[in-house]
Length: 182
Image (cartoon, rainbow, N blue to C red):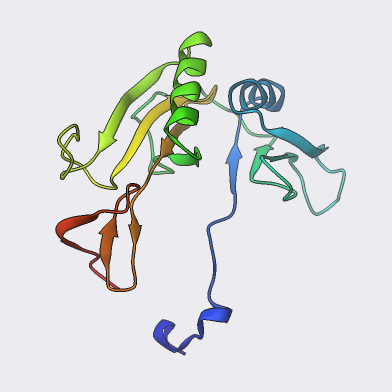
């Protein structure tokens, strides 16, 4: 069966969570609690279940059991990661703010916590006058967690309508811009 043959009610609906391998679960738990307010749903230690030889901490933003899983292999050597170096992996993952006021609050929070802001704040836009010439039509900034995973905090990302037009947060279409695939 081809993707275009799948009925809408059976299609995957979202990318729901990410599992990060971390060098120290306690340090990472503190970071994600303190910066983003994630809450711990449950934590399990290595070999607690014979099929799972690593530690796992399930964290959530809302009501779902988990949005982020912190994973640690006690048998693995974790050399310090050098930002922008090493083998291919996840470039970044993102947390969406409901509005610009929330985005600005997290930006201030990052500064108050002396987090390294590796990019931004920036308006990803090739259309808006304050934009940086990139894509997405959204405000963003990027920080590093204790293991140097790059985290994007963003708001007001454009949506794609049924005709493929980019619709900005203010409801306006981006002129002369359509999604490559509809």
